[in-house]
Image 1 (cartoon, rainbow, N blue to C red):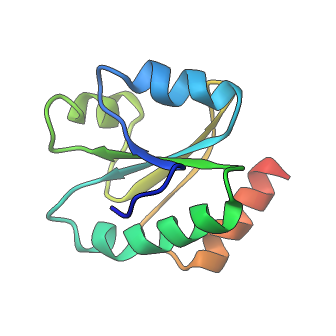
Image 2 (cartoon, rainbow, N blue to C red):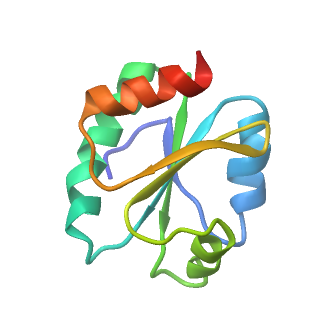
Amino acid sequence: MSPSPWIFEAHLHDFEQRVLECSRHTPVMVDFWAEWCSPCLVIAPVLERVIADEKGRVLLAKVEVDEGENMKLAGRYRVRGFPTIVLFRDGEELGRFASARPARFIHEFLRQHLG
């Protein structure tokens, strides 16, 4: 993961604060991913570019589902496959998509859900 002020890791123990509470001020996309997942590795740099293009208007939280108890988060949000990207605003899910997608798809997804 490249260093960016708009991209961070989230875990079961800090998800409430780092994602849900944070989304009350700035929308947060959550990337539920796994190290062994090829599409996850494909979409990671695409998400980083989109977040850089957004210049802080949207944040990205990376949740490695195989790390610690993070699989419980995937279960809580009914994630069935990886990667799954879930967009939160005001502590609520606004939308989601799964699988690797091009940057233009992700930009359009954000426009549809955030205006």
